[in-house]
Length: 88
Image (cartoon, rainbow, N blue to C red; front, side):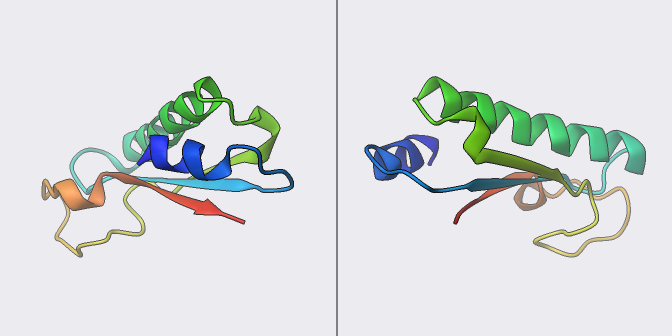
């Protein structure tokens, strides 16, 4: 998916990329907030390595607060561990 973003933006100007990091509900809420930020930062580094300007990337961390699949606390749900990419 990161490669697709890089390819689609090749030669383009004036865009902004928003990366929203998320986790599942496993672990402590504070840890998950930090983990979701690190997850988004990893995607940002991959985009930068592919030629995307660092200044065009904005990172937000949501931790476990916005699950794709609602679960009880402490439930391991792979679909909730993600980074959403928005191009504006």
